[in-house]
Length: 273
Image 1 (cartoon, helix red, strand yellow):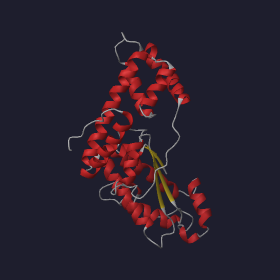
Image 2 (cartoon, one colour; image 1 turned 180 degrees about the vertical axis):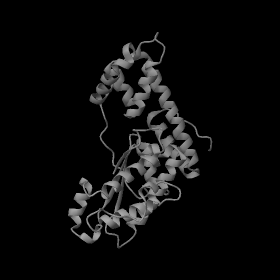
Image 3 (spheres, helix red, strand yellow; image 1 turned 45 degrees about the horizontal axis):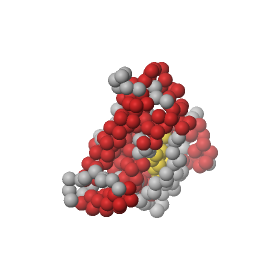
Image 4 (cartoon, helix red, strand yellow; image 1 turned 30 degrees about the horizontal axis):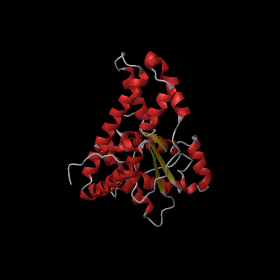
């Protein structure tokens, strides 16, 4: 199952995951679907299917998934692994967006419960593998180290960064919208690197550049916009560290002092000593 949280940034992340689950289960209930055919051939056991080959049956209704009175994600994934006797893989793209709302954090807790329900049972014929990808490395790493999230005990693997070819593609796609506010490729590449090579931040910068005053050249205005976005991101990260407690603040302070010694600048100051 694949879910892209960036595809509908205003949507509830839990609704997007629920939609992917419902689609997968619907296919398993449909004998003519490719997924049903692959799983059926893998099982080679008629006892796992309804009489007459009507498809897999589950102990919950499809339309009740995600409802307050419906099955939990732990129940759904457990039945998926039991009935299909296969590993269940859920890939969530731009997973860090789940941390931006209460409902998203609730989803991460529910996914952790589902992972435990499936993977901690010694007699389970399949496992649940949850893969999260994201363009914000710090937030993705945070999801690995926090004990109450879906990725507790997991590990993070850095992907190669996007580069000049991607930036050129974005500029080509946005040239009509930007018109005479379009920056040169070197300026855009530098901005992208300054923003941590994160695609969504580059798009934010280009949108702000489009709406910026026309008396400044785009290549002059873009670094100013980038600096503002970097400062905003730094403020968010500092607030996040403060919310994690005294230990996280102590780790930040030690890291900041080391940075000062190496680079010779003063890091942002936290409200706690």
